[in-house]
Each structure stands twice: as structure tokens, then as C-alpha cells.
Length: 140
Image (cartoon, rainbow, N blue to C red; front, side):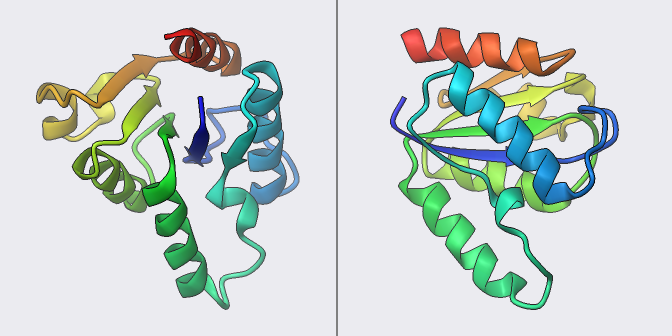
């Protein structure tokens, strides 16, 4: 699958909460990476140590997104407007993008109604649905 950027909009609806955002992101990332045989996977949530230097982290995140072959977004509910900006960035740079949502209705109109050739939207109930879909995409 090449270089993969994984963005997780963390909420209580996704997976039983862990001690911290970084720990939750790390557990999800490792499960996807190991079960889907992805060698290089970057997850911005895992990088957050403090909000002191967040501007530098944002620059690094966008550079990695720009260099990635695949972009995977897990967007379980209407949260984090910055994730929507990153989805727009991935669409504009024509990155192969997988977007996982609990319900398509929570996405902005243009994302849910307009057919972007590089964007695939899937619903999921749990992490296993996401892993199964990534595996199938990896086979293409």
C-alpha cells in the first residue's frame, strides 16, 4: 500500500477510551498496521506530546500527508473541523483516500454528494470493519 497517512478523529464512540489521545491513536494505528501489512504508517494523533509546539506539528503533518500514497481518515462523528480541511487537502492533491464514517449524513454536503474519483467513503461499526476494508483496498 506504500506510504500511509492515518488520521483518527478520536471520540468516545470509536473504541473504549484509553488513558490518553496518544495511547488510543497508537493502539488503533498498531492494529491497522499489523493486520493490514502496512510498512510505513504515520498517525498525527500519536505525535501530539503537548500543545506548545502544535504549529510545527501541523506543518510536519501536512508534509507527510502530501508525500503519502494513501490517506485514511476515521471520522466516527461530527468533530474536529481540522480533519475536514485535511480531507479537502487529500482530495485536492488527488491522493487515494479512504474515509470511514459511522454515518455519511454527518459529512459536509460536498464530500457526501460529489463524486471525487480519489475518495472512497465507507461506513463502519467497529475497528474490524475498517481493517477488513483496508485489506481489500490493499489487494487492488
